[in-house]
Image (cartoon, rainbow over all chains, first blue to last red):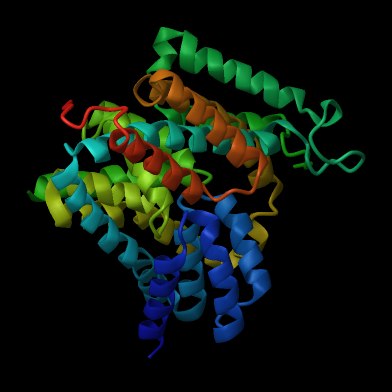
Amino acid sequence: MIFLRLFYEFFKTGLFAIGGGLATFPFLSEMAVRTGWFTQSQLMDMIAVSESTPGPLGVNAATYVGFVTAGIPGAVTATVGLITPSVIIILVIAGFLKAFRDNVYVDSAFRLLRPTSTGLIAASGLSVAASAFFDTASSEAPGISISTLKPEAVILAAVLIVFTRLIPKTKKLHPIVWIGFSAAVGVIFNFGNVPM
Amino acid sequence: MFKILSELFFTFAKVGVMTFGGGYAMLPILQREVVDNKHWATDEELTDYFAIGQCTPGVIAVNTATFIGQKNQGIIGGIVATLGVVFPSVVIISILAGFIASFSHLPLVINAFAGIRVCVCVLIFNAVLKLWKSAVKGRLALIIFLVVSVGSLLFDISPILFVVIAALIGVGLVQFGYIEKEEKK
């Protein structure tokens, strides 16, 4: 029964892939070899598409593999399989947290977890910056250097900072406005260096 | 009950559809929708959920949705919020699945996403500044922030390691008497 197997395979992936997103890919790669449901090159396409569609990477991948294997019911089954273990685990942890929130040990641990998780978020922003502000795939000199810096990206970032931090009226606008604005600017000024 | 559940579902569906680039790119959207608009959680709680999400299985976006839903409406709330956050992905990917291989090579898509990446950087920068006040208090917290951000950027160290060590230091501070055991917030 294909649906049970899909559920089971993605349940396992959801249970063992710790750290989100890309952590699911080694499991998917192994699943491709073992089940023959999809190919390695389909998996590669999936990574590219996940970077260009909204939503979490792991969920997108599960949906895609499920869809390729058994249509829309397959997509739903695989996605539900993937998220079931983490939903159960988080519900249990959330219950514990409620009970131990005032414990002085837990409180002290969280006081240091907050700068940790803020640091991880800052690092993820900086790693996106590498591909946003530099032409890392440049044909002459790939990598991060002054010659690969994209001035148009720096100008866009400066404009966005002024709008989102300095001007009181535009500060209140929803972040999606700026995402849409940046997508349009990227298309008009050819940010990806690909002729339209 | 039904009203608040459908509110949970649609708010998280909105967060799911607006999250480009996965994981942390979701943070600025969550701050706007869940903290500022709905008041379902505080900035402080969001950083807590992200820290826990780093060392539990599953996608961070899903873990955070489960936490906030559970806090609001118990187990059923956790499930509904989670289904909401994955719903847009299921719909979008199912639609795109047919021509998925060519989609990411379209010049329009490549150029638009080169622009979006710049925006995501700025939004994450803003989100970190917003978290800063509640998350990075005192010298030890500042040192931890610097070590973690530089360490995880330059070296291939698992985030789980940082989270576990920070939690252990926190517990150790109480155990070895740097923080009074009786101290209550």
